[in-house]
Length: 457
Image (tube, rainbow, N blue to C red; front, side, top):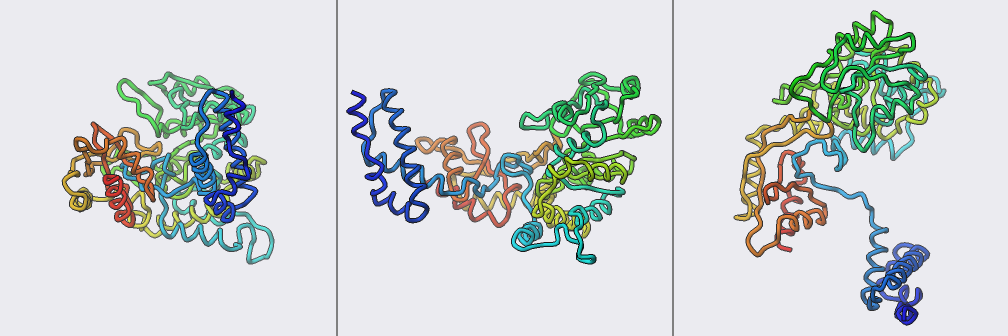
């Protein structure tokens, strides 16, 4: 019986000869198309073995066409972020300034002096392109850029504490996202984690009592993606630095978000500032490039020169080094801070500093375009990206309620995700909500067209 069902499957040649598949073979690669057609037929054979009927030829041809087009089409696609989450990890974190994009494009397009000293004509270091800027902005003696903040921490622990002890508050032995945990990073580095205090309360005496001849460093990890409330006690960085100084121990400050601005200016909770950590005398401060800094992915380390030099010379430094494109992007992003133009140029800071009046105007304009299906409601935006947990910004939202007999809100959200460009919104209380704070001005027309298309099927 199964054998007769197998006979209903078309041959590879017959499928490849179909007009639609033939055109794809001419547009892409004949061998690729044949390979994917064979893969589809294998999947259908397994389906038949499981008792499912063999689809008609027309459906098989469409399945083959879809499989080929899906692989041929880039999977990474532009998305309009209408969620109100400013640094959205699932959507690529911080969008970049036009100057940053141009700098990365130039570095990628042409040869550049990445590791060439143009004065001497000899090999140089890629770190020279970014170190002076980082030092100037943070007040540090030296600096280093690597792939991301997790690799920065791994490198620092490997270079400074392998085979030795590093003391951290139990409440800061956190998971930083994607299942990656601080204790696991420490194990990979060869350093031994010594947890002190309790989840909610840690005192400086806990750190001091744990110091032994094997202790190499004291570590503070900023709780950037969660917030403890109630009966809590934590050790101030000043206390940790003073204790480290008395015992000749390095203090490592994992800041996570990498903020250079005072967030209270915008009605947000205070976020640790890199310059403050350096001024307080930490050995090394470590932070991300693609969160509150507003640049591409990177791990940035600033601090004392003898410690930075050890990191630069460590064999792991090559394994986690930053590439030329992102190096150029971080350089361009830092220059916005140097010029004092970060609020106008860096998208995440433009979003954070946007006035409620401006958001109201944009939301009303959207409602006017969309008609009676949409209304303006009060709401909140969040910074996101493991930054400022529990801290929100007031905003105005465009709310779309599904009319009786029309498309449901979940279906509307799905249709929006499948537009070109894709639109990601949020759903609350059976309302589809669009937050203008995270929609770039140049995306507005495309967003409204996408919503119009989704509403009209």
